[in-house]
Image (cartoon, rainbow, N blue to C red):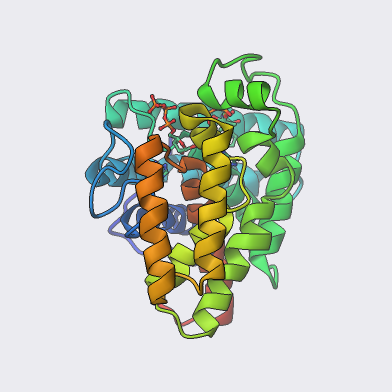
Length: 294
Ligand SMILES: CC(C)(COP(=O)(O)OP(=O)(O)OC[C@H]1O[C@@H](n2cnc3c(N)ncnc32)[C@H](O[C@H]2O[C@H](COP(=O)(O)OP(=O)(O)OP(=O)(O)O)[C@@H](O)[C@H]2O)[C@@H]1O)[C@@H](O)C(=O)NCCC(=O)NCCS
Ligand SMILES: Nc1ncnc2[nH]cnc12
């Protein structure tokens, strides 16, 4: 894997820069507080084996893999080929090994490696686009729909089992459909909340809730089942209908959602990954609109 010097400030749009944006988006997601059922600055959420320090170390360890994915996408000269799909699959599986070594066997970011890896590749293929977020998601979806001959037929992962048992498309389906929860819910809610003057923290929490309210999160399904997923989705929608996290009503409803997630041992890890994806794409769009951003 390519060596990456994180002290060095890479050129905007370069592969190390894209990798840095991806890692920063993962760190922003992990630190965002208070999230329902998830690891944040307050603690472990519904998890016994995760904490914020571990999430941050895991995120940073993924930088070289994201840079390699961007390089592989650039080498494909803007065309989402089968060879690129298979290169990304190999780099993605290696990144999962790096994650597991870093965390001593705990799954912190498997879903994030998948979603973010595809989006980094999509962004690397469309660096000059006027609306990089949408272009990156569209290219990422095209890559995700290609078959990878080297992927294991059956992984036995909890997400795979939840997709089979509950008939949902899961992480693969979300990517293959062009990340609708990110493009149609996360990003618009982030922008809506900001434009009405909500704080950045409230805007990001609202974006997480918008994603959670409509996502077939296999992390919730496998830990707590379909009734729990429906309850969390309804609670998340209620916070937004109550005015969002910046309001007193919204904050009260968010506390209820958090309490319910903890009582059900349910963690919306898939929604957290897609919030990180939303923040990554938002960073790309912001750089285009405001090139002088620090
Ligand atoms: C396509 C893969 C992601 C494999 O997917 P699969 O469904 O087979 O299996 P999982 O390993 O379960 O991964 C899915 C993870 O994706 C997140 N997720 C869940 N639902 C959705 C959704 N609807 N849309 C998008 N993303 C979704 C979620 O990730 C987060 O949760 C993880 C923590 O879960 P937890 O249950 O706590 O942890 P476990 O250890 O599993 O259980 P416990 O013991 O703790 O109870 C955490 O990772 C978050 O990120 C799902 O977990 C992909 O792995 C794959 O095929 N890779 C191959 C490489 C490749 O092709 N790469 C190409 C481009 S990079
Ligand atoms: N903040 C978080 N807590 C638990 N699982 C996660 N997966 C991705 N982000 C997470």
